[in-house]
Length: 350
Image 1 (spheres, one colour):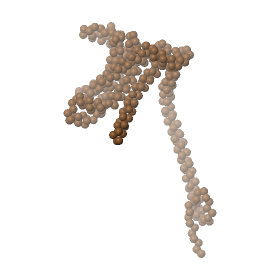
Image 2: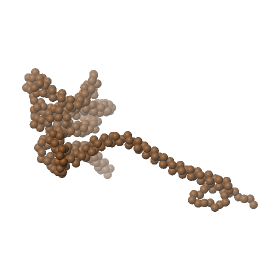
Image 3: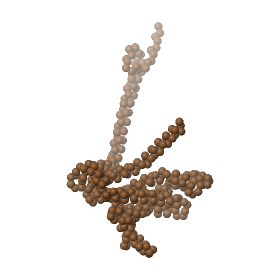
Image 4: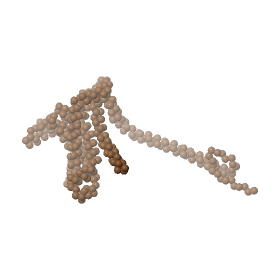
């Protein structure tokens, strides 16, 4: 009888074949077993080498990042945590501190000098922020025109911003000196009596606002000018074809396009105004009669002049809370606006 050929079968994993296979089939099975074993070995080796590569890349990344992390921890996170702990203590930075809990914060509420510093800071902010943004918008509109030597004018507007507040304070202290300053010399030639300027309690804070406007308006000009150049010319041309005048063009086309930039400048300038210090320190040192004492100068005075570091730290955290509230206002307003729009869309869909 003719013998039927033995069928070729794939190796069955986990079970042993008891068939009487031919030598060729056995050899084929051995080859498959070897291929399977080598494939399993390759698969197990590949994740191992990948893990080793990722581990090496992670170590290299941490080696590059660690200096910056140490600097951030050493100069920001640790001092912030330490000053928060300090605000609950009575500490003069020399003798051992004493835990007073919320006593420093209760004292701030009753302190008339702190109240005066808050009022001065709020008045300075209320004058400086809208004036700097308004003047910046006006000058940006002028410098956005095609006029001769416009690049030089733009540069001259921005130069005061890059001058440090300390240099500005020294410069204007000489100019506004009540006895030998150039400002009173000009007023004398115009027939106007000499002014006290920075030595007059009724004028000092307004003079500081004017100095800050001289330097800070340039930043608003540059940012607003960049936003103006991004306004689509087609929108302006379409509005002019519809008969819109300059006022309507500004109100209905340009200002809506500048809204995000104006909100940014409002937030930025407010934060800077609440933190003003170096100009006050160089020019008036909080005087005369405390008329220019702002919150940051009050903090410095309490911590490093009166050696009441815990009290100064409490004032610093009161300022930090105010800054957080200022920063949170735009986000809250945006969330409320988006919620109202969602409710309106849901009502329209129903």
